[in-house]
Image 1: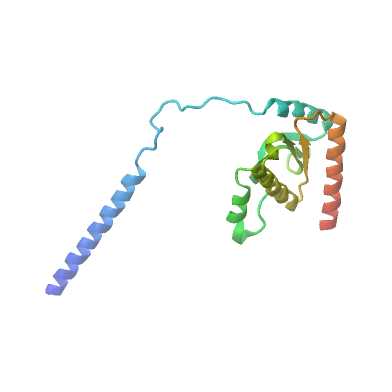
Image 2: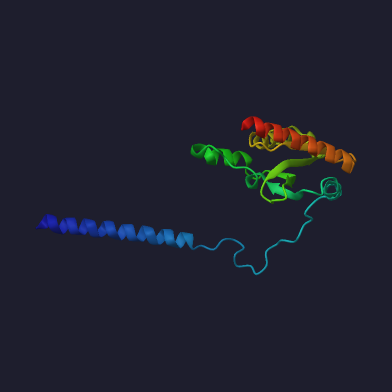
Length: 178
């Protein structure tokens, strides 16, 4: 009988500790996050594209009016991982990367070409390494990358020639891939 009382006391203490731990976790979750109590957060609109990107965008629209053009698109909206077991690892390799523009088929579904407008910042070693990763990810998915130098004037005709060449290469690759 004494062992029954001891067992009841031990189980009671165990449940009390268990309940107090869960209550503590609930109060930890309920703590306010800095800024949540503010009516207005410290944000303001910013320009969507740089002046050079706007100028190039206008040239791009003139060069390939038959395609849809989107700007500032994250890679995770363009490609997905085929390795289900290691998907998180590969997603983290491209997370927070974007391309300046994408050329999309009129069906608004199929990305045809990714386009980067490189400037002086792409001359840094860390940026070059990131550019290589971006190129490799897109090319692995069958999306060609075309780069233009942002500080040089490129005519609409030159842009069109480069992009149509990339599209022809994409078509050839897709035929080979079956």
